[in-house]
Length: 616
Image (cartoon, rainbow, N blue to C red; front, top):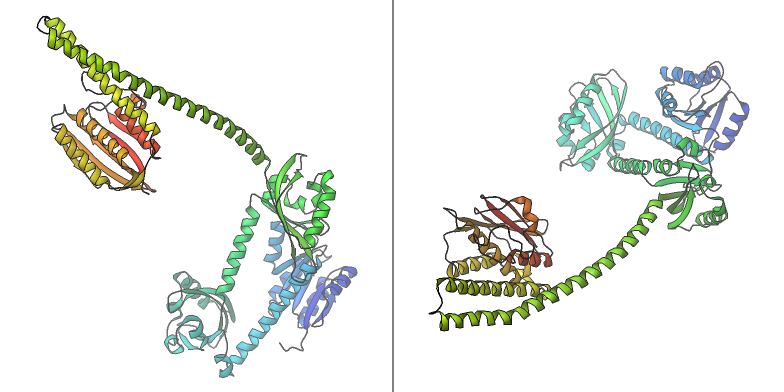
């Protein structure tokens, strides 16, 4: 199209006032207007004039807009003229879909939004202009090789039967990486993604003079790009123009994604103009305020703002229109059923690009329940802090008591043990067998009480000891513990170990954990014919899980919760000796390290003890 040419716009409406106002709204130096008051006149003008765009009223007597559009699209001369329907009717999906089925490319809804109307018409005229320019380029393709070679679009010829590329310009190399020589005689399918091949095959069978489609296509480096194809079919050849629209497709995908996110957001997102009229309303707003989209578009923002806040909001709107951006501001809103809710809102001004129309975009999320929850959480946290302080005090008292008791018991226990030995040495010859038996029981229980006292002291010290964390070589620690067990307490158990990963912890305390668990496994499997102990580890999510498994006496899992308590034992002391403190020590050490400890077992079939430590 030459720069001096004017776009011809046909306005069709049975009301003269509508035609007058629409023409005045859309008037521009590069446009000329034709008008028709009914469908018949509109068809005559379209058939006899070169029309670039038709704005067609839907509701007209005798022949409505949909009927006129059907006739225009069925005629070869007029079928490519873009049609925009103008309607004051409903905006439901079904109603709009009918218009699109009849060939409309867009809608203008009455009363017209001047900015939107101007923008839509400008875009369609620009597209029409570009299409005319493209057709002019395609016609010039056969006359000017220079024009072809300088084109930024891929221009070429494809055999319509074999779909082999016969000619392409250098844009083929610039866009896809293949030289024209590499492209010639290659089938188009070679460059297409698998999903596109069936579509192209189907298009090649159609008896059409022009084809327009989009495909993904492989570049030489095996990346994919999107091409928009416009093809003229003539003399068994495809004279084509293919434009790289990869970036446009990316932008469209992002735009569509963002539109979906906004539409489906649980936050209330809406737009209103400078007078407060709501012009956009998402699902989140419907959920929070109770108004449907259709209802909201007939309202102003004052419907959801408490009366006592109107003046404040008017001032806020003024500041936003002046360019101020509001972020995370707490406010009150009122729902359809009159309920007052707390919201956190953000807002900013948006324009149509020409700064003629200014609207305000608002995001609000309902924080009523959040505020209630925050108050409850604050109250619970305060109660929890008080209970934690009480628990710490109680634990400190218990540890102090345990330490004092066990420490004070040591002196009388030593005296009891010493006096019993003196009696045995000085008066053993005069005591009968029963007397000696009773004396032996006293000495045995004194020794057992001494061991209990020592272990209770050790347990108490754990609560006071500060952890000195280092990177631990667990394989070395376990190996030393196993060797010590074999030297100090000979046994028959076969001990095997897999890979034992390193972790972070206090060397002395973790070594004690291994001593307690391995000695327990040896002890409780000792009565088996072939006692076995297995040691290993696994890693996951920054923690190492260690285990010690035996095939010994096991225990009933119903009582597993008693395992790690002080003096809690699941076996008879006469059957397996022990104090019931070893596993309590294990539990306290691992807990202080931020890990956890547990066990799995089956009576008479063995037990497995697990504990975790952080890797770093």
